[in-house]
Image 1 (cartoon, rainbow, N blue to C red):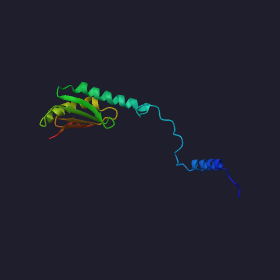
Image 2: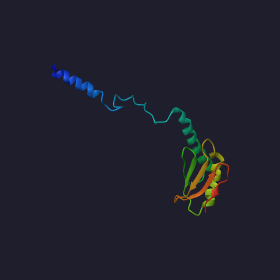
Image 3: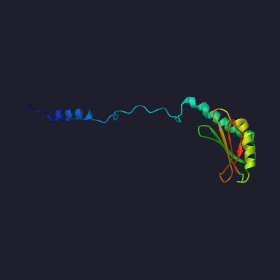
Image 4: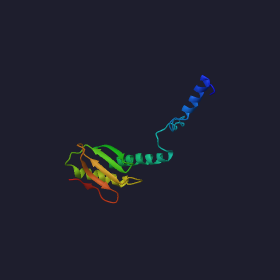
Length: 133
């Protein structure tokens, strides 16, 4: 039997072991460019989402309104107010005013909550806002 040098054995062992790595264990692919993870085509949707919230704030202008935010994928206008649980008729008026400008793009519903978090009025596209009991 022929003698193999120690260096040759080490070289053979390294070659064999390098072929036994796990799939995907090779060099990493380049990282994606920095950003927010959204494609450029989603930016207009986000802009229209913010525009809808701004339009609702301007249209519904009531001192009881604390915030107007968009939820879901811009499908819901959420209006938080300082109204008490018994003031659903005022909440309905806020919802009606918001409905005049809210239903554009993907927006299809409105929710008006009182200071306790209770939903006082709700609206959906194509129907009038309802006061919650």
